[in-house]
Image (cartoon, rainbow over all chains, first blue to last red; front, side, top):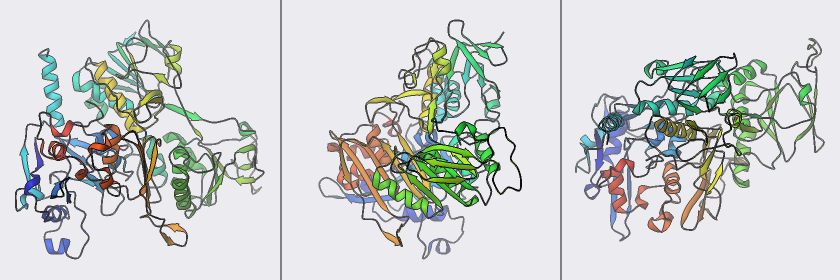
Length: 168
Length: 454
């Protein structure tokens, strides 16, 4: 399954991915109207700092769409669920208890703008963009949308069953 | 005699995990789910949100209406199991019939613990706030004029108070410990949450307990109208000599694991049902999961009851996969709580042992003495190069990064923990580990390096 992967050494810390994410999920047609003068609530976030040799580093972090998602297993409402390997959240079911925020090992789930439910990267499957806007807008290919052989949860289950059948 | 391949006793998170676990390996084996309740699996912790108007009965369902059908589950609501015969591999139902099984999951959960209190048995009715039916019964009993007395300031009592605070005249919580949420928080954290509750019309009587209840209309005596007294009300005399008048009483002192069936069948039971890392009991072909079992807490290196929903799901899933012939040990259980109180969030994980590091900022007095919602309370406990536990109140963002450091027992000397005490970030990890997480650059897929279940 295709996921968003990071080329850390190519990240310029320009934060464009954050703006493109916020715009894609705003439901608005005009980027200026959607973002100008507003605090943005992106589902991807750029970490900026220095490494152990004091060299500047930066990289973008968004949901890994884990094969075995702790957030989904921990969700107390059933709001978090898998759709073809993509971890999605049902806003109507979510009550904003933040158990998923306490569970995600990568810090990729955050409160929504309104603060009463959570939001997370759904690989732009639920907005009009269709493919990840963060990747599309990255000027330096510091994030890419690729299949690196990590199966989706559903593929993994099928492969498990096949291995079982062949007696491995 | 009725029989099937898998019987699941109980119908909450552990049962859902078990069904989903079984179906990863066995698509067709017959499954019967036996539940004492009449509802499809719903989220117990959401009953306070339901009373608060933040969810609906429909949205409380853990899975959609087609779940049982899609998973070929024979769901039997309002069906009580009275005994398990581990030798004959049958369960006996309250109506006298028996059902045979090949593999069984005991996911019987917990029941309210009500300590002995003088005169409680003379009260016409009180509420325990553990099930949807108990929440509905409480909802019927309250109105805008009700003075509600809650016994117990643990998570159940506190969330109950939040759920009804805006629908009643006031809520008073009596707690034996000198502070609220005594098992979840330390003194200073309890004080922050207490203030948050107090500005929302919830009052506390701490370090005290009820000695004697006196009902307005004792049990069995019909309530008289026009007396100005309330049908379920009365007075409570505390050990410190306070007299509290109330209209509605809630007992939310705690829960006890339902171990009776396993005990009756001859399985090993201590404080909870004893299970191994595959969630199997000491009885042949019987597994157990959820609030009824004794879990191994990796943050404290000891067995304890972890009555937590994520734990129940993951134990149920482990059991289900094992029941279907696979292997999926669950070896990473730890206490974890996340709760909001009128918009102020609190998260905690692990055990509060070892050296305490206070990374919080002095309390902000935003409105009088009320903490701002951005109150900075952050405490970590570190022992022997490992993060053992933490509590954050206020800005809880990305706190799962801390949880994973506890869960995976990552040596703190291998990461830059100082850099992330104020704000959790993946920057603290080595480049190699980041590549694994973010770029899948490794022999093993990036997305599986630190799962609770492997």
